[in-house]
Image 1 (cartoon, helix red, strand yellow):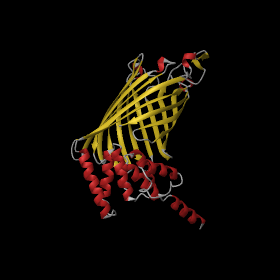
Image 2 (cartoon, rainbow, N blue to C red):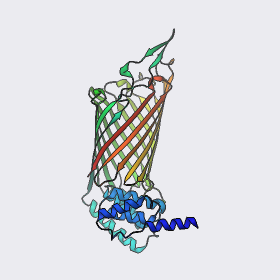
Image 3 (cartoon, one colour):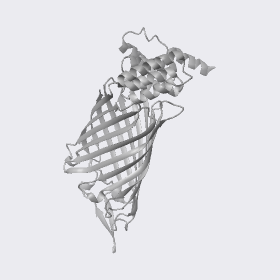
Image 4 (cartoon, one colour):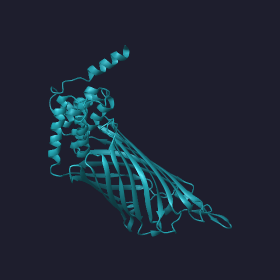
Length: 423
């Protein structure tokens, strides 16, 4: 009885007249005040998400509507509003997938289906121009306690026929911390090729500058192009180019081709899966002994209604030249992320795990030609405010890399704050 009384009290506290609270700003501020006590109130979250859509705060609306779908996956009206949020954020392909699933669902009432068909008509007009784009720009500043990725050990042993000789690392090879600034730019879009095929692309660029260590400066550019099904249900093919540039010249060039199959979960219109195979060529112009060819398989899972995404991959990197230390490498990776709405912001958490094993000894001078293995874990926590078009954010990254060879044991801590805009 006490539990029932508490639930009734909460429900009463979460009810207010959305149309009588004054300006949209006052309505949203009032809802934010109530939200901490109403996170489990389905009706409140739905009404809040609907109102945020009306004032074009689509990312903020999506977070609330995802909360509704967690509480009730069969809330068809919330799925419709969620599709509107997705399209407002530029993800028109996912929006259409949600709308089509709703239109084909026999459990959806006719009145709501009329609204769904109207939204589909608006969607078709939206993509009739054959393309859509989105651009993001951000600037961050922060502190990195290991700008150059130096080993955390102070000395290691050389293994010679006559015994071990200890070697002390120079200060330049040890971790060096410092402040940095970084510019981030991304631009993505798509255009429709036919009734079922669509091209999409993402272009990203980053530039990091450290006033305390010029060697830590770098520029990175990455282009990804894909051709797949507009309904996110079918085969896709894609390619990518990446280049990393440092003050001393080009450090890495990577070329990638991938192909696989996209599909959605039968029980949820908002969860997406991808199975893929990819091949890569990695070239190091300043150290071609490290060049290699990677081939592997990967699986991706994204469920926005839960705020969860995951990726798993495994493959082999074959040396281009037989002289590469360690030879062929087995590589495994797992990345899991979770977004959680907190007040008027979002807390993004991510864990990235990587493991590598060489097929032959790394060097006769290191632990008697021991085969190297590397295990790395990276944790990232970022909080960003949800403001229309522009917002601040702050985060921390922690990386721990362990290895059976001391020279490859690395630790890294990064703290940063920044601001990001989207249009």
